[in-house]
Length: 114
Length: 112
Image (cartoon, chains in turn yellow, red):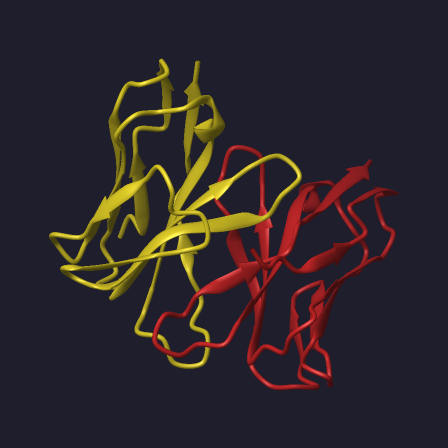
């Protein structure tokens, strides 16, 4: 049982390049989330999904797109990377929401945009 | 966007000391969670609180859900070097999205 895994672990991009971050979970969770973490700040929600085929915007969605074609996978895309998107990206998943169910986090993807 | 106020921002203590940190919000939550993040890793859940006034322990960690539902506290007793990390609080109201609002984190350093 691997939990939540993220690919890749590290990436360096040039401004304007595109890339996709992959998140996979094997816990049969309905809900999945993408966060970014910047120095001195907590995690901020980028996009989330409440089930296969559905996505919604979080707090900081600009410059990102997501897709949830399979229940176990949640993809985060950067179409044209900008230096402001240099950050650590975390994926999380949880069971169907009830009373604030706990979220389980992946190890993170460290992205540097030059 | 909304973030929770967490204090202190950082703590540098000696091994064996007790630690207290807190988290406050301008709005109420139905759930408070405390996570720990170690270098190079994602946050890991420590304690979940679901009821105002609730006091819950996990080993040397004790957390409380504030009676006003606008705050929460985490205490660590007899700290050890492996307690080093960043501690985040998070509030949630469940519902259709289960979105969490995170605090800004408390960095804890423990000197042996």
